Length: 497
Ligand code: PMP
Image (cartoon, rainbow, N blue to C red; front, side):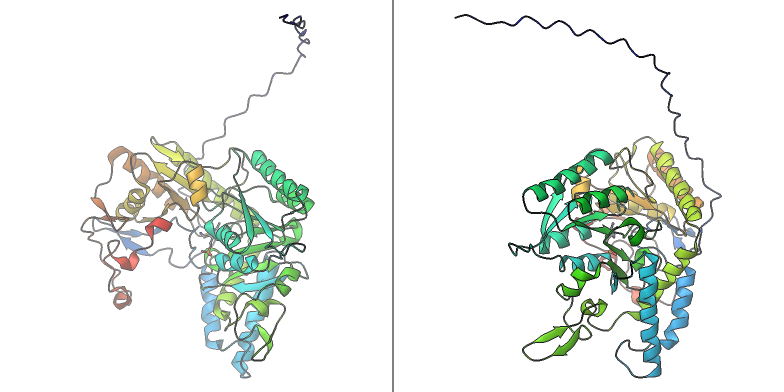
């Protein structure tokens, strides 16, 4: 048998190297200086609340868990106090105060919509929170016009469960695994959107976080909107961590819907919002069936309202809506540069201060993310995240969050299935609180915890916790079962954290 061989191709002649200017050497990013002197941007209620430590001292509570729930702005609490004497039923009463309360509610709706740049034809629906808003929208995604199958929704695996589970339950959801960089992740999304079009099964909606509740990072909104709209899909932003931290506008960005929570926007009075395109919402399944959502009811047939009322059955939360509107007023009046610089200074100090400690790893999704919001997640090797959080509370009076942050797919992909610790800051955070955290973690790394800790029912607690329930607050009776930490009164569902 003859073996044919081919003559080796002549070696390519290397082109002469262009005479290049010396590559600029990237200056190392400056390490953030301590932020002891950074003052809060806006006053919040409870900023000087004292909490007990296990050694018997009392210290001001350092609330570094703002991403979970932010304290009320003082201006929000003031507005609520002024509105309460006017409180009466909304949309349901002929009495004078009912009329006033209805006007307050509808004015609040307009303020909330305007704050997120609602277009003239957008609806602003007052909900309970982001979870509620996204569940509501999930019920309104149109079915495929040809097959009648549930509409297709594309989601990234970095999402909070609130922006994952509603789509999986009600729509035809596809979860895309993000790439190692922003660019790679955008390419994944574009590829999946294009595949949907090519298969004749285009996506109706792309559901994306405006800022990750784990790392504060986000994809560039303009690129996401261009990709989605180019493939005929709409975009909903989970604005839970975005809206409290950055000026955001539906009209300016072209985003179709945004969902957010009052309790993360310095207005913890039980209201949130869904704002966006009217057409789906006007014909979608009414979110709740009940009074206020209907025009006419017969025993066999119901005519539902269009507009916000369609999805707001039951007595509206006027206090919550007024509080959220008050927060929107305050945030709108702020110079966005001042707010951004404050948060950025605190965030950079957290990243650099914690990152410089032995055994501490700061979590991020992408290397090339720009402008993350003030959320920093980390681990301390050798210490369970639950123990770190319990230690910070018991020995330093610092409140953080630990666990998997209702973002199990992301934590799993990044290799943090055992969870992590999250510190988050906002407009009411002082630099001193950030410094306390950095110092406390340093002392954990150097010396270990001073108290003894154990796991009870899946939660880390101080053994024989000596901290008393808050005394003199007048709330003692309401805290009857609160042997702090150890009792189910403060327990949550550890598996779901
Ligand atoms: N999305 C993100 C990004 C969040 O951080 C949260 C709350 N942790 C939610 C959604 C859910 O918000 P809520 O609990 O107010 O419904």
